[in-house]
Length: 310
Image 1: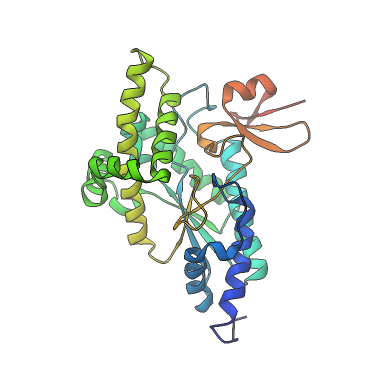
Image 2 (image 1 turned 45 degrees about the vertical axis):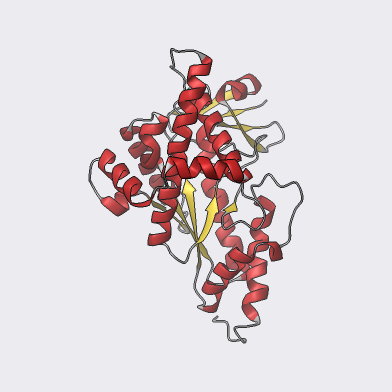
């Protein structure tokens, strides 16, 4: 039923109620929880949809591809970690629909091709991962979710050409990012977190550890450049959407960090880990090597899926 109460009164309470459904899953390094009122940017964005009695659209950059390090993941295709995460996102949309009948949609902005050359994952693995995401969404009936990637923007151009296109049009300079990292704690934390992931994801480096770290620090700035470029492109194609992030975000930031599954590290994602079902039935994400020490490998549809504790 359309909202007929005065637009200046209804959106405030409805928007806060919608945002409160996200707050338990806020991915942040801030220690204290915050009320909905501490997120004015998101409340304003949600209000635009509520006033139009339209589904709230969230965009979530992520689900790029699996880590190339076999000690962290089970393979190059989505597995139980992605299945659980997609189910969580869809359930969040249905929860919103219970309090706001137009509901919500989440556009998963799969960004593997944006970074493929920097994270050393072949483009055909990225295509296979993204295609399987779409298949999982369809066969699981997750109709509040959709996938958006560079193929939706630049079609069948060569992947390197697509990367060059968005880099040249949208990316900040490395010098600008270095300056920003010196004065902005969040940018510095992001840079360090990405550097750590790049070091961990490198499985075949033949040089010294210090040489690997230097090389990954350089690549980390490239990843941030492409991330900013991808974010700007998403904003062009989905200008009204509420921007979610898989990276930790400060309270009140323009992007809302969201935790997909339980994990011991605020940076852990399904594509950098394997899912472990604990003996009590709960799930967590861990590096494959650690999960293998805690549980037995389970297959699904002929492929490794997750680990289970007995």
